[in-house]
Length: 134
Image (cartoon, rainbow, N blue to C red; front, side, top):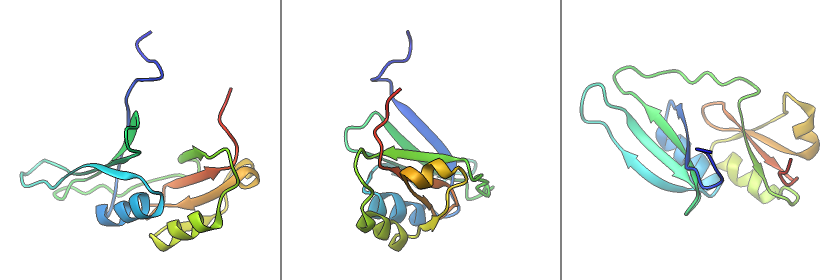
């Protein structure tokens, strides 16, 4: 098998404002900046990579200053974090103070088992009280 539990994963998506995204994911959610670069050459992107320390995944948030893309998230573009414990209101407060917006989930399952917060670009983060398992 070419993919296993140790396979590194990167999820990339555009952002209107990398500083706002950093506040949300670092200050609000508690991830760390893994890499950052600012483009000085035409055709190159500004990058912000955030993830957990020593994690096997991270987000790559991009912005092309010459040809910026408008993020186009849908209500079902979700990043779900399975906490295995009740969602703490303090965590939700930090996310909102860091630029997020608490929203109702499109799928009522996520409202039953967690809290949904839209990031500054409109992508949805779900803090789920359940554990993940098949």
